[in-house]
Image (cartoon, rainbow, N blue to C red; front, side, top):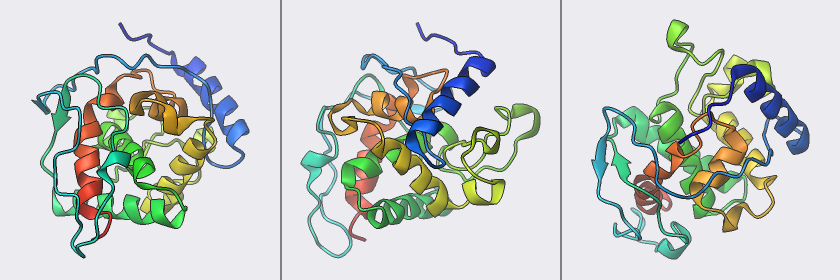
Length: 211
């Protein structure tokens, strides 16, 4: 069972994490068990995978080290969505920002899986009554929690860099299961949901890292 984090406590956790990271980023320490993922309603589930089986070459023909993509295997039932052109462009934007930040393919997998869970890779504006407070953008970052202005967090490069800065501040994130690494940055009320997107995120990185 997930532990539901109240809005007030979640804000406190985010503010503490942001102070550790130093910029618009998080670095809290909530440990999420790397077990079965929660399935998102309305999203097609796939069988559980333990490795990336997609092509390991990008459009340029350069090889992607697929061993870096899912070094811990994947946890739980995997979900998948069909991406539009805009969503694919956002994948490419996340990858470009990851490279610019000097981080590797695994960081891109964590970032893309997080964005798949938070926004389905759509750069969302304010959703009114359906909004989680003032969360916006690919990573559902909140201006009120110090992630940046609305204009900044709806910019793909800025929001990705903010997320990656938070990830970089997490000691040992490379050795964590994806869902734990993502949760430590995001401080979500549903910490196991990120795990279900690892296979698709890894496939997208393998496809677009060198494109």
